Image 1 (tube, rainbow, N blue to C red):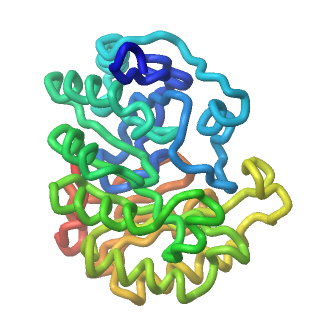
Image 2 (tube, rainbow, N blue to C red):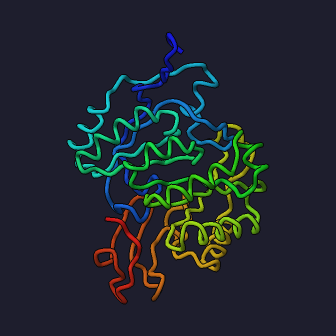
Image 3 (cartoon, rainbow, N blue to C red):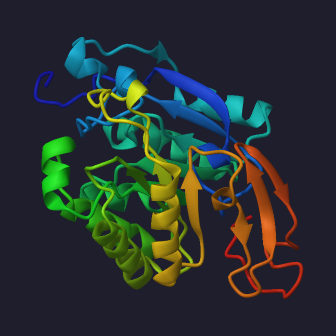
Amino acid sequence: NIDGSLFSLNYGKICAIEIDPIEKKPLFHFLPATKSLSIASVGCNFKCHACQNWHISQSSKINHEIWGQEIDPQYIIGIAKENNCPSVSYTYTEPAIFSEFALETMKLAKKEKMKNVWVTNGYLSKELIGLISPFLDAANIDLKSFDEGFYKKYCDGRLEPVIDCLKTLKKKGAWIEVTTLVIPTLNDKATIFKNIAKFIKKELGDETPWHITQFCGEISWKMQEIPATPQKTLNRARQIGIKAGLKYVYTGNVPGIDGEDTFCPNCKEKMIDRCGYFVRRRDKKGKCAKCATRLNIIG
């Protein structure tokens, strides 16, 4: 608060800027096999014990330090254009925390016919959603569990605003993909998977991709003692999602398995082959090359 006006302490302080595969967000049905200029500033509105980017997301809380390179929005757009990136992603930490800077950048990106992507925990106010939605093209939103107690204990947040955010952004026309990081003993029960899958199908649509990703305790903030998620748990969750009627359910952080690939929901033919960030498309302009079923691919 400076003379009655509020100022964001991390405005324009970019702590990370990279050119990433869009699949790293992860987004599998939005501009597949393209690059996205990805940026972040220090900070987060959650305190997730499982955070794997905690060095930057929690820096202001741990070290009481807000660091980053001074960069303006026009410079970001210039880098994206120079490197032929069709999108800009606001990611790595929580874009709501640097939303003033993100919004200015999004407006410039839209003028240059670039797409805007948020990778977010979905803990956004209605006012912020209203500000960004005219410029937001796609979002990957964490749905960490379907249990209020989990959010309070392990994230220092609440579930209901995340649910509201998912439904609101979907209604406003953004392409939505959902990610659940599966942590052994904490959110790996079949009932949780069933509830998430049921919610996605009912409220977001069966075309909404669900990414079920492996937890790695070694790089987490406060859960180093918890072992990595067994592959069989990820496979079980994926089958629950498919059985619930979701068309596209993916397993993440375990390269080289079928759970990374896109199959036609009608004839089950593999249409996009993925191994890590290597992508080979076999579809025909977003349709199955065998039966012509739409694969719900944007771009």
